[in-house]
Image (cartoon, rainbow, N blue to C red):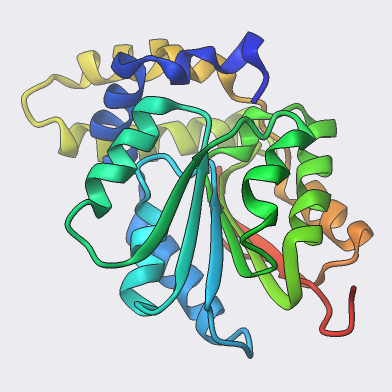
Length: 244
């Protein structure tokens, strides 16, 4: 991730504030995970090896392990506090999981995963939107290269709204969930924290339609936005079975 926008994620305070105060209150979070798992189960191949890119505290990986307990997972992030949180999540589990500190803002991150691939599934949750659009496209191409033929890429992501009105609807939905999550705070306090949080400036949102088109141009098949509510989307595609 580019240092000029994302260094905030390397601080324990920002990582903790996000995991405890924002990530835990994402609207329809369980529904997004359910869609991800449904697609992985229907992918036509067992999930034996998977990669979680920008893993945060390992929430996606944990969901995959619960459904595919014999899988082997590689969790990649460039934030030590996030990797520490992921390590703590799996500390008492017997899952085959490896955490790797790598910054996928540059293509060199592939070295941290290449030896463990190819992967039956690659997932990412609320991470790639921190990259400039040009880098997003490169990351999607790098992911394509790491997938096994028939492998599935799924991105649970924060995407751009079509208009300021739709953006306001997204904000209202998120604030409703945050207010229920932080019952000890007033709506005004929740709004102040939501709009002023330090990680918000690191967002570089792109329309889901454009990102799906980028995937098609790279060569993914079955590309679609499988679930979307305002700025929250689950989208992705498969590497063709005959692809190298």
